[in-house]
Image 1 (tube, rainbow, N blue to C red):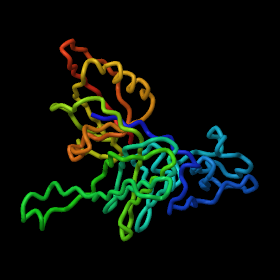
Image 2 (spheres, rainbow, N blue to C red):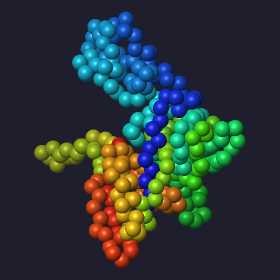
Image 3 (cartoon, helix red, strand yellow):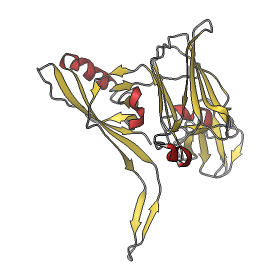
Amino acid sequence: MFIVPPYALTDSDLSSSNLTEDDYDEYDSGTTYADGNRVIVVADHRIYESVQGSNTGNDPSTDDGTWWVDVGATNRWKPFDQTISDQAEGSGSITYSIDLSSFIDTVTFFGLAASQVTVEVLDGGGGTVFDETQTAADASEIIDWYTFFTAEVDPEPELIFDQITGLSGYTLNITIGDGADPAPAVGQIVFGRAYRLGQTLDGTEIGIEDFSAKSEDQFGNLSVTERGFADLVNFQFSFRTDTARRVKRILSENRATPCVYFADPEIVDYGATVYGFYEDFLVPLSAGGTSLGSLDVRGLV
């Protein structure tokens, strides 16, 4: 079992992207906005919507909700806004180039809709130290010749790239799509240093928490309003008792930070990969050398 605390991406780190930040016009303090008008503030990479008419001189980035409402990140910055369901969208491919200021060894993707993803790392001199392409398709339904020709291949929503040597001063290049994808999209890109907490055990559980609204009228007819959902994973894992203090320290340091948790990069098809927060951590320690832990993680929507 692994945890990946996220790299804190800054404006200076993101050196380039083929996604332009022009979702709407930039906010202008001298313009009068009508109810429903939208603007962007590039300084905080957010989109705001006016909630009143005759809206002049009210800075949306400092407004208390009287004049503006924050409706989300700009398209370029959506993969880094801690919201999986609100995807960044492109055409052909989506590219990012990031100048690293601290070490990373793992890059993860959530909410993917693309044919493939390529991760490349260049050293300070431009030499390639990592270059890997993964197909973003779930072909697990194909089990014989019949299903080879008839099965629908679903997109793979999560991918993990590990064993990367991304040192400070190196460049991380990400390409989502093969250049011909009609509408590549990604919900979140999370990268950082992976920490091994222990060995994932049988009995690890996966599920979802659905936020759809279901109502029934007096005649028993059901109506459903579809909404988002959060992934749930209950990790069962073992670890050496003499590493308990380390495990506790890593988890406590990230108690208020959404992180990536996964069973193992080799078994991503099991669905035990989640980006979110863990619940309270309490483990009975064993003097026999190996302790058994349980950790509930609730994913972001």
